[in-house]
Length: 159
View: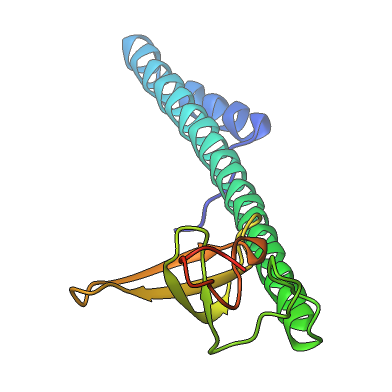
C-alpha cells in the first residue's frame, strides 16, 4: 500500500474508461462516484500535507526550546564555574575583606552562623550556606559573599 499522489492524467484516463464501459444512468453514477473518490483522495492528500507541516513546525519548536533551555543551563553552569575559580583564587571576599572558602563558618548580618557548602548558580548569589538552628532545623540558602563576615564581636555584631 504505497502512498502515491493522484495526478490529473490518471483521473482523465479513469473517466475515459468509465465513459467507454458504461452508458446512460450507469455512466453518470460511475462518474459521480469517481468524482467523489477523487475529491476524497485530494482532501486526504491535503490533510496529510498539513499534518506533515504541523509535525515539522512542532519539531522545530521543540528544537528551539531545547536550545533555549540548554543556553539557560549553560549560562548557570558558566557563572558557577567563574565563582568556583574566584573562590579557589581567594578572590571571592566577605564584607570583612577576607576570602570565602568551602567548609568555613561565616556569620550573616543577623548574627546567624552559616557553613559554606557550595557555589550558587543564581545570578545574584555567590554561595550556599547551611544554618542549623537550636531546634535542629536545617536551612540551606543562597547567600551573597558581601553579606557575610568571619567573626562576630562580643556584642553579637559584625566585625
